[in-house]
Image (cartoon, rainbow, N blue to C red):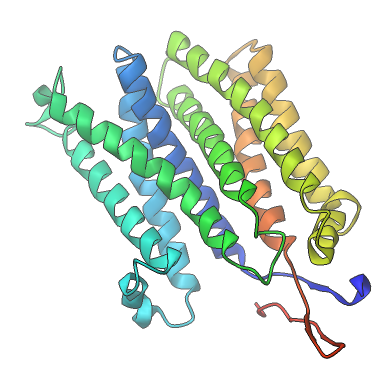
Length: 301
């Protein structure tokens, strides 16, 4: 039975790119909002998160729009917010972009002077961080409703997307700070310390995610593809080595700007691989009508 299960691309590279960009953008907004509350003096991190958040999500949404078979019907995504995660996700993404755009206006003259001690800006920033978190996890909740793919139908997937998104968001902030001029060593150090724990937590969540796939045949087939099948190089090399081990070692033994830059790039590449193996590793459960096994074929590219 297991040999007759079908795997392949359920979604293409545009959806994978959207998942990554939305994760980095939403994660950066969440990290920036947290720093604004806990370390209000770290204004550079807050502003960097505002600069990164919405543009990355907008680009990701553009790719998602291009992936639609009928882009002219995209407006229907808002038609059933009480029943469909696609409709809820559209509302979440729209609210996130609007909130980030309002905050971005504070960077532009003549509004710059309004940021200092502004309770309105703090409220908008925190609300933007909340919607940033929702932006990261909602796709996992959407995938969780896909009962025909047991590899996605687990509550751990939204958590995995959340942890990976916040981690890549922190790495994106570090990379931006490194590239924008003289490094703000204290703020970069704080971000690196936070990301160390996020990387450990991400590895733990991924381990639980794969371990929980043993009850359903199609899910076990997905895990085998990652562990020792056609996706093993992407998983062990891309996710584990490039995405987790190298960034962790770099941040734990930070010894220079170039070294940290390399670690951030590896972590971001690893974030792409996380989405790639989760999306591509999907194996659809077969229909079984009176003992006749009917494999469900993936959507062609």
